[in-house]
Image (cartoon, rainbow, N blue to C red; front, top):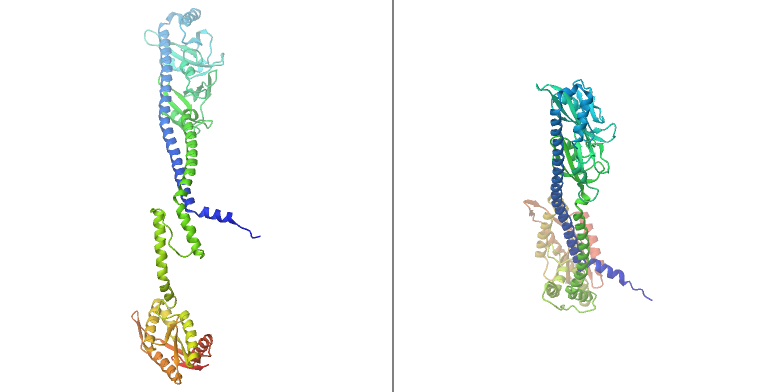
Length: 539
């Protein structure tokens, strides 16, 4: 039972179908548009939100920095006021001086860790409640002795094991000479100093603030419950942090030391030379962008699915009559239907194509006879070709058999033609062939057949020859040789071309192939004996 393989054919037609390609093109355009919208819109939202979030973070950082700066200034002013009110006679009475410190410690809540006084020799005179700092080596002691108030660098307290901030103010006599230095120590984690830093939060717990001390390269980490001092990241890890340490104040997007992208804003605490960092992970800051991206992906998928479905149906109905016309034309090519014009269903582009096909079909029928004629003639010289000569020769031999006449065949090959082709080019050679054809046409009889059957090979067929057949053949051969005696003028050059001729004489009993073969063989014998000659052979 014969097997049928329709599925591969159908798949091949679907793959090569113009509808499939149009659908794929349209889908590519839709997908490209969705991708462009995805990137353009998300980039626009990200840039827009980035500006908003950066401004928000900078505002928060500025607020916290101003609050801390005010509290630092408030403590500095209080310390300077206390230093100005220390009785000079108590500097030599440690116990009474300690009582004075206790009294004033109880009256204020700003210096929660310690108050102490050292003399000009950096010796402790009195303190209250406990001494919780390495005062002899403190930069604030040196600044106080130099006569100016100073805010020291944060450090870890020896007793409390917690971060503290020492501040100093000089104690001067009436003449302005420094007699001692008053130092106030505040615990950084105590209530009232870093409240705005510890209590301010944006979003979830991943967002926080940092208080950075550039001189000591430390910062206060508020991400845990306890205030801790930690070293800042090394240069080259966080580009925005490096700029901030160099003096930049503003906002931007950066990668922190953990490799997490975040929006960070820096604002100065001018009284102490510190700065506040407000930071927020971009995953939280740009959550709206992520939701928008998911929405765009879902919308693009649904729109592509919807478009593909309805576009496929629509394209099928639009091109349905084209499919029908193609099937009908295909049956015509297999001769299952006569060659007839196809039906035009609609006057659209497809209808125009079918109308054009119908006109082409009519024109092809009109050109068929003309093509047959062209098939029998040489396109270069206009002479008949080998195909026409073969048919003509068989006809002439049949007539010769009926009429008891003879048939003559002149097989001519040009002498010196290859040299012209090689020296002057093929265009010059083609012109020589055209002129040779015209000269041969001028000497042969109208009833004879002149054909070009090869590159430089010509044949003259003479029919209805009687008793003087040989004389007629030699006369025509001589005329052909003489026709090429005059030189040819090609492209400004003088060219000499001769011809060698082989003559075969036969009657109605001779076959076409034998006659052509005999003439060809005799022509080569004539060429060997000397060019510009002819030889005759009787079958």
